[in-house]
Length: 381
Ligand code: NAD
Image (cartoon, rainbow, N blue to C red; front, side, top):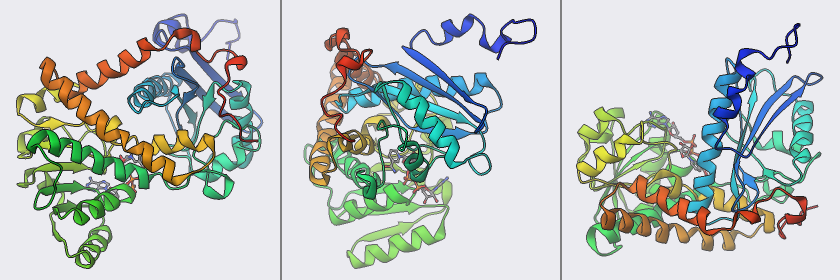
């Protein structure tokens, strides 16, 4: 908002263009009637319209919100490219407290802003937003993905996400041991929520043994009970002990930033493949893992089952098609591990190179700037 003397506040000065130089478009949404203050960031539409969730947080400043949305939208470009989706990268943030500031009217206003982008941005839930919020936004725009099943959506994303973990682990097993048989192999799972629990079930069915931990005792008891039904072996450990177990593969399915100097020091595993977002405290830790001889499957590929389902939903829901598409994660992880070994680089560098090459290979003229280039699957009314 301009100040009295009509100057821009320092946070919205020309250096904004320096901050957003990697991005195609930023839309600041302001609706005083509903209190909506949001930033939509479209990072890259070379592969298709931008896709990314909407996060709601009580950001302390415009700069903090902008930094978050720029980082997250760029991550989505890589995630979509890695999953070979016909989508680009985008993300949005709503500035506000999700527990106090949310109203249906706010999300309807937000839906109108999304619609003004004419098919260049598709969004759904992220931290601080829930499916119901987007049922309201959907009244104003068709550019909503990840809706509940009763609204034509694909439903629970943790199902394909957990399957993607199993495929990633099988690819890693192939690389480590020359076969995919997980029987008798040991896994350390951190977090037994929607994804971790299902991943644990898959591994138990493959005959694997598990070390598990969760801050919720109830989650651990639920899995222990399920393991008995499946005749599997589960050992529950407390908190930090999960890092030092004698497991073969570590499967982080709780929170980000858990691969740092202190935890990597404790790891005895040969590989890491899990669902948690942003597992590395920073990208340098990929090199620390490589130097320690630990194979790291990049999180944004391992956990891409969810985004595969959300993207697929726009063709009309079909669970079998999603599960088939999720199988591609096996090949993506194998390709990353192979490239990293061949070129003696980290798996994070290998994954970035594969994504960059996919972006370069697609002619930029396909960019979804124009409504005339709307995708053919945009059929939902
Ligand atoms: P969730 O909230 O259902 O489960 C997280 C579990 O981790 C909970 O049981 C919680 O008690 C436990 N937990 C939290 N902190 C912990 C800690 N310090 N140590 C041990 N356990 C802890 O979440 P989810 O949907 O299962 O997602 C798990 C992770 O995967 C998140 O990082 C999420 O961003 C990521 N992810 C999820 C999906 C999906 O489809 N749900 C897709 C992509 C990525």
